Image (cartoon, rainbow, N blue to C red):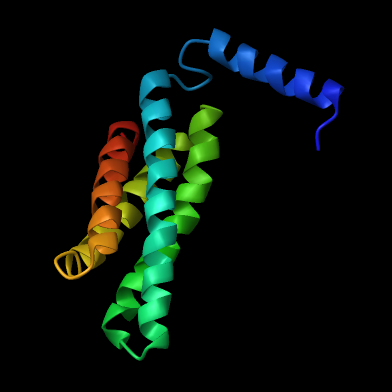
Length: 138
């Protein structure tokens, strides 16, 4: 649990970041859109990965590549969100990686989207993240 002093410090940093339009690297609204999309992608990806693991446990190996792809996507989206929130100078490079990994994940989920609604949700979230990342990847 955070102390009162720590909570005040977090609040101060948050206000300071909001006071600088676009943050250190610019692209404020685009960075926020990417952070939000990545968070949605992680929620959908966590559900998709659990679904994949459940199917794998039942012997359905057709979903193995999807599980690998989702695992990679989760790692990248967990990393891109904080960089976007901080308007890091490394955000464009991470956005390029995010776009590529989310595009790959969407491709794997597309193979199962008709049979598995969870995969369809992950596919849509990955497409949204890839599109948001593409804007910052330049």
